[in-house]
Picture 1 (tube, helix red, strand yellow):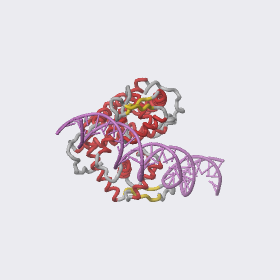
Picture 2 (cartoon, rainbow over the protein chains, first blue to last red; picture 1 turned 120 degrees about the vertical axis):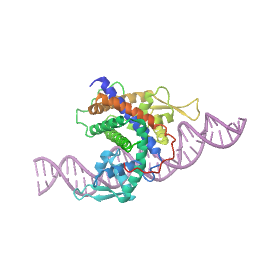
Picture 3 (cartoon, rainbow over the protein chains, first blue to last red; picture 1 turned 60 degrees about the horizontal axis):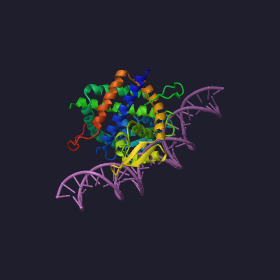
Picture 4 (cartoon, each protein chain N blue to C red; picture 1 turned 90 degrees about the vertical axis):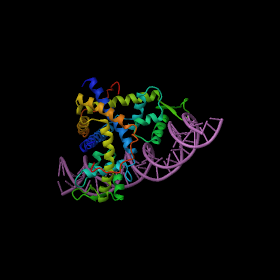
Length: 162
Length: 162
DNA sequence: TCAAAGTTCATGCGTTTGCATCTACCTCAA
DNA sequence: TTGAGGTAGATGCAAACGCATGAACTTTGA
């Protein structure tokens, strides 16, 4: 792998990070969230995309939270009647998580408003072609993210810059 | 703006979010961080990119943290001798933030290792052309993120899905 | 068959975050 | 000049987070 290719990779990643932070701030500042925080909404949305009950660790794959934090977040959502937790008959260790009617309704309400903001921001910045590119690039990066290739133990060698 | 264009915008954004979460988890799991957390590193890195002292609110633009959280994060970094805080002679309200020698050294050490991981993940997933595209797209999205166009008060209309 | 190792989720605890608010300072118009 | 309004950053406090660990269950291999 060439030097410039590594460099380009880091520039691309930094660009993604900056865009993410910038837009997340903007979306979070919108007065659309009401009862749910952005992270809670993320969980409600993930559950809404999935048919049938989900396991906690499945949820964890999509959400940037530690397992204990996610466990408690779900607990709070359950206390508020937005998510239902049931024991998994097929695996005594696990829980089956599903949206309640109220949870689904809440997700739809907030999601509808949020989608408007997302569309406004993204369509203002990008062409159709760029949106397609971003969608494809994100998919590839996410696929790459999952299992860290065993590889050799982390190289102690130190690159010059970031 | 057409229906499908809004839809595409939301798909692109979701794709970015998924990639972000997936890779952030992976990077965070790497044993390269040592004394500094990822967020602390983000601040050190932002300071290292900037020539001359930075103001707290400038830092805030690039970091996804509330102002009080950032204020205290910087305080902790200052306590550890990685960042220097000085009163701004030109504006009595502000502070001038700069890396200390130790802070710069720490940023370089961690940054070097982190850059290796970023390069590994991104180059494994994307072509050169895609990296260029991502860099350009991120730049446009970030520019879009900054000031929310005054626009009309938020539409109460609700789109069908997200 | 059954003990050792792995997986799934929950909990104790110290740390960090966000919200609201406060203080100090700057700006601008009257 | 002055006072009303705005901005930069700090602080009190409750909520949420991450790490380490625990409890319950499943899987594996001898």
